[in-house]
Image (cartoon, rainbow, N blue to C red; front, side):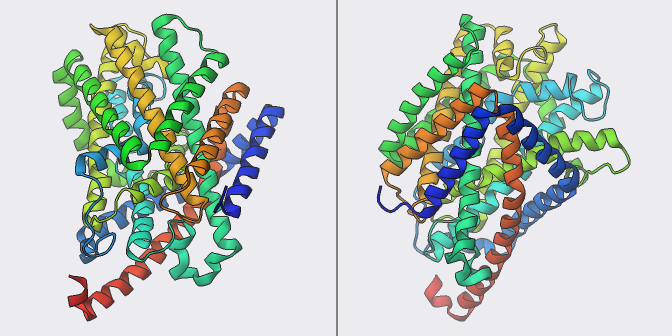
Length: 500
């Protein structure tokens, strides 16, 4: 395979070593990774809350500042993709499968099983359930993605740098980013991507299996999940082979059409008026409580603080660990947009879609629970199918849901092989198909190994441990970006004719 870098071989070796450890000694892998994770969330919870709030503030500042006019690319660059395709692709890569997996399960859980501070099953717990789900999937999550995507797009398309995380740190650290330090940064980004995607593939296989088991009584076994992973691997390899403007674009558009269909069906078959009232009310309480929730550490209430660690800190670390993959992919599809247009699009549109989705599915799930359907008693991967079972046309809806999980599954894996290929061929914007195939194979193999050893939880822990050093890299990226932006603006003011 020509043109792969040492980052490819080193990351592959690290990933294989961790997978072999997971197979040979799952207990020690689980206990060490969960020990590290709980240490990080206890001692660095405050840091995660501060750093993610900083990313939100930076994004809001850039929307309203004069820097918003700067284009991600040359001054005559036009966006490569239309708005609908752009939104569909960034959404499919960024959160698709998570919304389907947790759309019903998360709000129902906060209402009945894991309420923040209210008594389970009360009106207060119900109001908290939707507001906190919005908080964990809303503007903060997308600000993390937006920061990485914006900075990589800016340096790649405007300054002609390689599409690597390390290249964005050159204004700060100079040529040191071309040596071992730069390699270390890129290895960390690639490792976080592999682990994040393998976890998603594991979740996706478990949910498709959960749906088949709920509908057809097919048992949830490793063999079934392995077959699902093999079928999906063949499909996303075919999509990867057809390239960015065909495979991922078409599949993302299909995703959005299927998601819109399921959303509308749930909105109208569920308690429509109740959903719309809850959506409106929860958006209001979400906006109102943003400053408090963003920095809520509860230092004097151990029980509340534990909830913040288990949920908010976990989610922030999860999104940071996913940021290299989603961020680099969003950067790749965003050439030609202005900073203002880019951040508004990445921050606001997916957050609003998430609010609509969680309102329809979450409130329908809570309503079904109140009417005697035991949604909370089902495993997370079956909660959606449990809700559909209480609707008319349940079989049709469940089949559509399985198709949607399948296409989200394929687009996530496809965009990840693209990003991994890019990161391990020195930032090439069109990585060789052979490199994408190698990464595709290893992603699926790791997901299968983890499902076999019951190691999805351990991998989730590893992901959160990897997020801590990567969050520091993101802070340095913001400083480096600001330094380059100021230079850019001074140059524009001196030579306005060249830039308009």
